Image 1 (cartoon, rainbow, N blue to C red):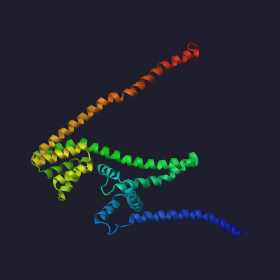
Image 2: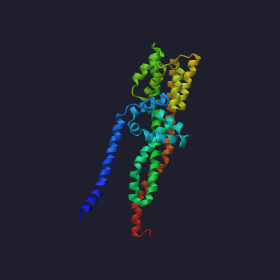
Image 3: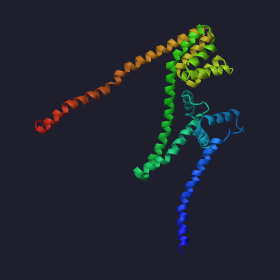
Length: 310
């Protein structure tokens, strides 16, 4: 009579273990399948898009693991965030992220990270605030996407600042090499090697690669201008291209633009120095009030307790 009862109890105990085991097996199978899968074959898609996806699968593990989910979210992003995608794409190019990423796919990866963190947010919110915490958990998911988007923008801004700080020195080196007898391609290659590893070397290296692949000098610099999308760099590249059209020697153009960059950097430093006094005004007042309270506070308290004031 007791055997069916024990059998039912054992079955109930085995079901959760079986579910966990199947989940782990499926997760391991998914990871192994994603890691050992070869390049996707050429189908109805454009060959360029297929090559881009294959390269992205090689350079990014998260895309390789979750490619179907990222592509599904990317299709939704094309319609939901159509106006924001060009700005995201510019930030991707400026930040130095592999160019195989599309804006909607990069945003989809951020959304996927937020969705994966959603169970943690929901558990913590319900544990602290009860069922009403689900609303705060959803806010946390949206805030995670916003933070990842803001991180991309900050990364692009920092890399652009690094490029503008080092560009005068690269232009000076180009000037010296060309005045010493090197042609433009030789001087560019040598300058890229000298600054190897720095973002400015990466960008001018792409200009050199574009020219070696058959693009004209104007097209290569225009592509750099579109990637960085900065007014100051746009002005410099415009001056270089205009001077080339007018027949001005490139060495002279590079020297002039290097001096212009240094002058603008000095002007930015002077502007920040002038703003420092205004920015320090409020902290200075707070520190002064704190000092007054620290000095006069004990006297006020002692007078109060001694009955002189009350």
